[in-house]
Image (tube, rainbow, N blue to C red; front, side, top):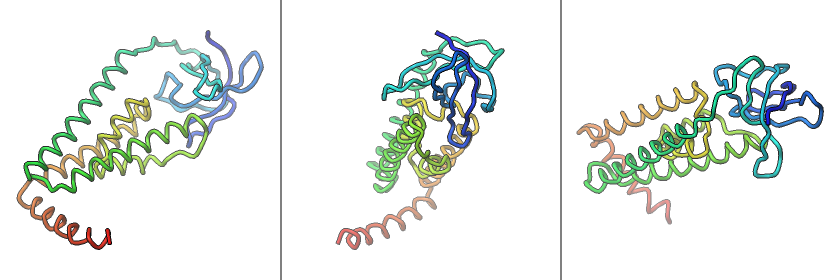
Length: 216
């Protein structure tokens, strides 16, 4: 069932606000991802139509929000499933490639742990940011999310984006994310060259010397 209302509160830096129903009643929470048109930012006072769903905590929130005068597009669930499948395969293939190169001694072992550790941290950060967005808590900085992807956590970040459907519709963020992925992959390619391998060997040797000190 579609409802009509007016956006009477909006926190653009946190990506959520509240809709005042035209027929009266309590305000309805709305997140930026609920808007069908992502090419424009919501503005207080705009008229919208929306559907109401209940979140995991039993609280109502607006979904499939459309600005007044715009048409509602059908849900494309197949595209979401395909995107999730591609992201999962790409993440696993890349991590397996890094592990394989390490086993063949083309890459030092610490890079495997760097990619796996950073991917786990990135995954958890996206999950927490998604949770914070839905519950109105303080969000993670986009620069922090991008940084973890840049240092090697992008496979976990990519998987989390598709699994939680988080940050996938914000064009500016996606452009920055894929630039960070490209930089990371280019850096990894440089590590496979003779000069890059020599630098990594020095770094790996330094880490091996530091580990006993850190453990003790």
